[in-house]
Length: 121
Length: 107
Image (cartoon, rainbow over the protein chains, first blue to last red):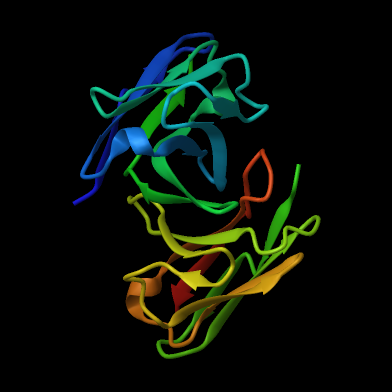
């Protein structure tokens, strides 16, 4: 069974940092691009970042560019999101997801259950 | 950035009803649309990719259609377990963007 388990969320002050982790089991982790998506309270889903299977090509949403960094350790089947200079509007539930592609089509499947990040003084 | 809109924002229907959710893109995205179901307290689940391809294991009452700028998700016979928020998402270009969601409830 494929499982994605996020951790590392919590309460942090504005300007602070957190590192989220996503441990994956049940599929060939290094063969898949991975992504982070967040859901702020009362808002919809927002794509944050995607990283290819080799870990050397990443893309970011403008809202986190320069503050967040995605990385992965394929030997540990783990995806990371380093979040720096956090702001109130970064408060959200953060989900990791596998990014599947076929031809030019891409989709997220499966997803983890999420980890909650609260930025507040 | 490609903006995605959805209508209606919410709906309430009876068990067995046919339900249709519409998703519109701010520019043509051909068939690069996916649909997800998000139940409270869980991670989102993929229902349909490439506009109309049903993910294996998803009940056949779910279907997707459309191309260009207008897309639809249809539930042919609404079931109690379908209560969720449904999101469309474009994968035509970065940044990947989601619609605002449609909340589906049982009347």
